[in-house]
Length: 348
Image 1 (cartoon, one colour):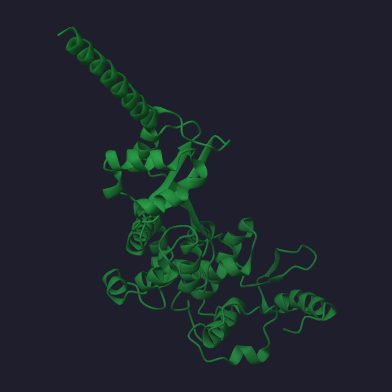
Image 2 (spheres, rainbow, N blue to C red; image 1 turned 180 degrees about the horizontal axis):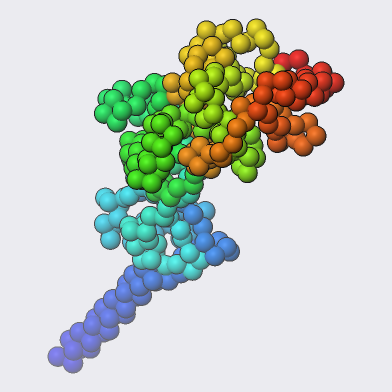
């Protein structure tokens, strides 16, 4: 009987030791620090269709013990509920913290774009910053049903995208990107801006199209209201805009090569048959020739009131322009610019 009791006690003690060992290992696997990097944070991007193996592949360089992470991920059900996005792993995190982070702490990313001249260019820029690839983005941005529903067409579709920096989740798909940009467009065109557009007898699309020309004419934000005022004066007086950037855009659009660099518009270029050639077609072009900055749009809405009808680059103050009220005065101003072009041997 005593021997049986000893055996039972021994068995119990061994069992407790084993349970303690197992419990310790479980605790260690879940709650012990499991990172191997020295920076305060490391970031990973998880695609929307990722499996645990793909997540592990990204985490492997960051963890001391990958197998313990995978065991905890399986135990907590993460392996069957992986969510795409950008996540931050903090130095010293344990497996439990890592799994909880990957479950619920998707971080936004900054998405920026500037003065793209075409939707393919925009799609390429955005695809470098979120998960959606350029082809899916281009398909969504060009969707005829979406464009028609929202009163855009092939000429005006570029108008919807206002250059800025926005916050998105990295795993945003193409349609969600498109919808967000439409919401930003609607938010931008508030009652105040719409009233200012009506006061100058322009629609929001026309304002953006004119702002695109202003954007191309001057890099100086403090000059844009004056340039905008020139074009509004010409429109009110029934004078052709005669804006060189529209001719350059017409050439690019006709050739399909938006990377073409043209520094000097020639007289033969002014003959191009295009609705964007403001030397031949009256009024504002049918759509924007680039994505204008918000500063350029607001410059049109708040254009300077003056009597100028002409302007030309000022070679004594590069970046700025010389303005004129009469053609004779303009031709004198223009002469200094033409001389400078010839001196620099700029023929195209």
